[in-house]
Length: 137
Image (cartoon, rainbow, N blue to C red; front, side, top):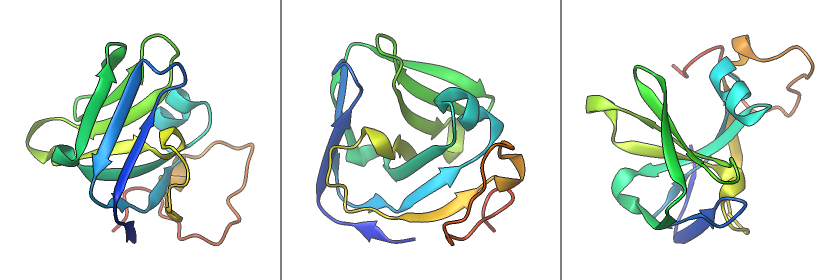
């Protein structure tokens, strides 16, 4: 999956959480799993970076929710913005950043749809981007 170089920034709707990224961002992946659908209201579109590349510039309203035994989701407790997803434990080298929270221009492109076997029934995926029924092989 492609990457873009440089530094990016973003944050939540109310400004309670602002972050900066140093280094490349992974191409955007759309996740259609039931947890992502419930936390976002549709599907999630996220990029990712090594944890060390993400710095929080404002985080007084940032809260983490353990959505499964393996992962947690970061959100703003004031405006409700869905911001981050990260694995917990030993497999926690990266953090996913919800692409819509990045300041534009992002320079990113959608590279894949994952967990399409779990997508809702009210929409079709017809953009020609590769699809995987679960985690990509």
